[in-house]
Amino acid sequence: MISVAEAEQIIFQEVRDYGVEAVPLELALDRVLAEDILAERDIPACNKATMDGIAILYSAFDKGLRSFNVKGIIAAGNTPIVTEADNECVEIMTGAPVPDTQDTVVRYEDVEMNSDSATIKIDEIKKGQNIHRRGRDKQEGDIVARGNQRVDATIISVAASAGKSKLMVRKLPKVVVMTTGDELVSIDTLPTPYQLRGSNNHMIRAVLQQYAVTCDMLHIPDDPDATKDRIQQCLDEYDVIILTGGVSMGKYDYVPQVLDELKVVKQFHKIMQKPGKPFWFGKHTSGALVFAFPGNPVSTFLCLHRYFMPWLELSLYRREKKRSYAVLNSEVTFSAALQYFMQVSVAVNEDGQLIANPAEGNGSGDFSNLADSNAFMELPAEKNIFKKGEAYRIWPFKQIV
Ligand code: AMP
Ligand code: MG
Image (tube, rainbow, N blue to C red):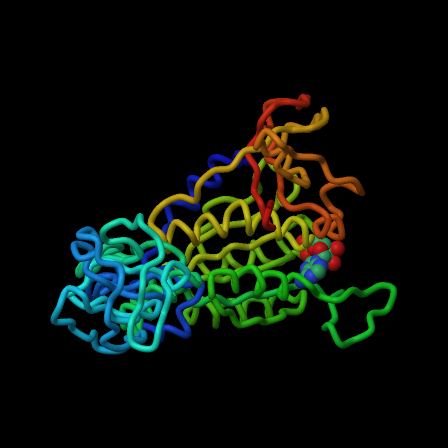
């Protein structure tokens, strides 16, 4: 049996590069941006008024002039009206271009407007006030969004304003989720007391959706021939096979034996951890990777967060996910020589520290607990007592704040 760190290292050696592709902007959400987005022109592209009011030449005001003839009105989107004399002004709306003959905007609140003239009521204004200068935010060719980040609403907005109807993003692996277990029935079937509804496939699909990864789903009966048949087909068709169940020591746990027969080379089987100890990981000559997780839903969920998602992030972003830690808020004892992934509820206290409270309930196997907690805390196998105030690594699966 190997340690959590060894398992992680083995999986990280199998980082994959699936290449890049262009996708329409409306399909780019949650994908990984594979290019820098550049400003196609200065932002803003002209000097713009930031207030509704009048645009004047400051030197005229400075010489004592207060009353100006109104030459016209400029709305946002209009071509600027050019003035000819110092005592002329234009009415200007927020977002409208300031003519080159004007350099200062005085807001309506500080002006008395008459039919064709405007009188400034205040004595102190600053040259250049209320103007958002051309190129002030970004200049043509500047990077407005760096590549290698998740496409979110801000990136969509920046890309749209830069005129990009398509974005280059990292290609995603083709994934199949295969579940095993004759005791499982589908959502719309009423289980007998001896059966249960399969949930792992739906849970895995939901986790994959966070990365915009889609998957096919297959259920295999607990039968070695059927198991072999289905996995064999999938090895050629998919980049990643995620299996759940059938990897333990039970009479009907055929997965490791079948994978071996199909020449999927075992990289490890079993990790010194709880939950998720029987996790099996291997690779096929086709390049396909097989993540075979134990069927217990909490085990599957933990293995996804601790191994699969970090592998996916490393493959898509070419860098490791940032680590997070939290401070334990009560003493915990765990005597087995296993890395213990404890369900915790993490919140930020008034000192800005992340504080982890162990979730109540029936321990790590309790799937219903997951809805009330927001992270796993990784407690090292080398220790048995974990004291209040000590900090340990966490694996958040919900937003913490
Ligand atoms: P196994 O790893 O096949 O021994 O399964 C361990 C436990 O997880 C059993 O109690 C199964 O009923 C349960 N289980 C296996 N697969 C699923 C699944 N797809 N959805 C929900 N529970 C499952
Ligand atoms: Mg089973």
